[in-house]
Length: 180
Image (cartoon, rainbow, N blue to C red; front, side, top):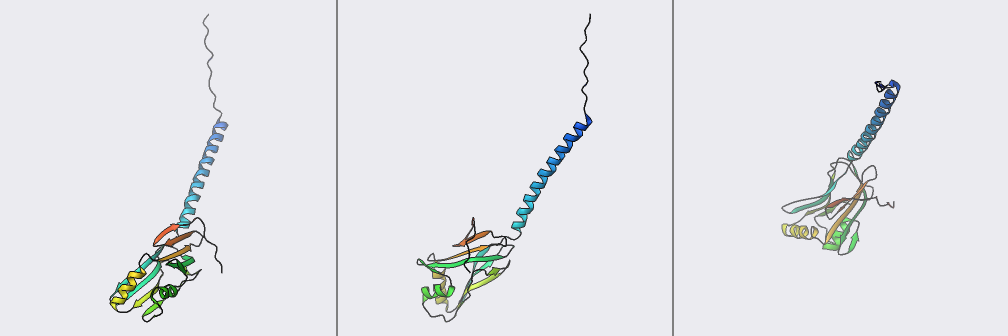
């Protein structure tokens, strides 16, 4: 007697196959949607990224020291201070007085306050000097030395903060609270 193995045919259930493919496609669409949302969110934050820098210029008998926003979005000033010989100053005029005395002939200052907004591309000269070359050179040497430090904390419109300190910019974990 010749016994033959039963011939089994595997039946594919079309409903099961369609259901599994629908679940796979739905999961794939969900993953793509999550990735795309993260990319759009990151792009949104980077489209308003401010980047503050110190700017200087000098020529015969004149000197200008300022700050400018080289980023793509507005910078909102949260804190602005100078440090000179361990003392803190919130005004350019005050630190200049501490360094050079009260003779302000040929000296101009602009003050930056909390919540001041710099648009992208804005620049402000916070110290301008128009004096003889020898005095200008002395002021440049002392103003740009390591003994004077400018620190600015600024944010974007979403509340992300950065600190410009001694011409080095770093991102902060959180913004300081402003006391207005």
